[in-house]
Length: 258
Length: 56
Image (cartoon, rainbow over all chains, first blue to last red; front, side, top):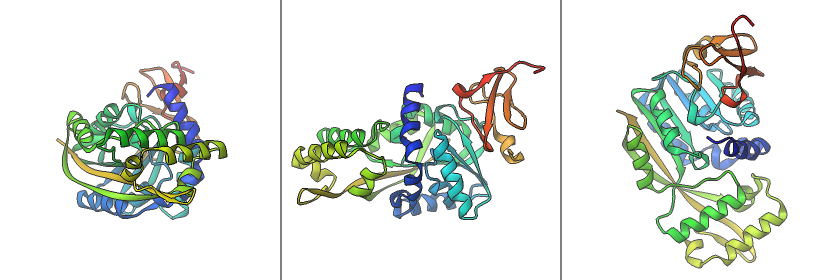
């Protein structure tokens, strides 16, 4: 990815590493369970977790795969993930810093590659998927979870603006049809798919990225002034002049290398 | 310390070629670049690599 975008991501997550380790939304839930069920089905010897963030997915993989590589672009994030995973007693996870668009692994090195709640930060999803395909063995599984783009363009523009104000490294979320086109183009065939809802408690969600009070108030005003149908599309819960929560839909896809 | 399992699958992020592993850095002889190992973590970022030449 471009140096400018890489620096945006590194600045964003380097400053908030501990908050991502502590994040309940990343730690688990129906979404992680669904992804893990797919992982168990493919019985990976070696698995790669791309953009591991706080390391929750890599830790879960460590219980299923013989060997796991946790991979991230941001050094403080990866160190925090290592500390977290080691504190849980897992010893079969290695840590590598790098760029998803230039994976430093041999062709066919992995039986499974996961990428959870991260692709909306990628500057070039197509390039990232080509790399995932390259490092998978033939028949290996790519397991992706990410925020689902909304079919209503106005709602999609609204939530993208909310996300970018909260986190400047947010690029965009993709619709199911876009994901399938990306995967197909990369030589990955969709085997299974699902959608889960993820409630975002507003205090935690805005707090995690260390927004200033002014930026947060401006964001809340933006949300309140948005068309009702845009808020309704994400089940924004308003309590008086506070925002309590909203709900994302997350897409999960299992796509195998041809 | 990079374990043998990891050494077996790591390649240069730029050229995907074989690497030479040293105590504090990882060398791609083809690209003539050295990638740092910081606090035990291989930093396989192309823009963090430094120039390397044989015999040094």
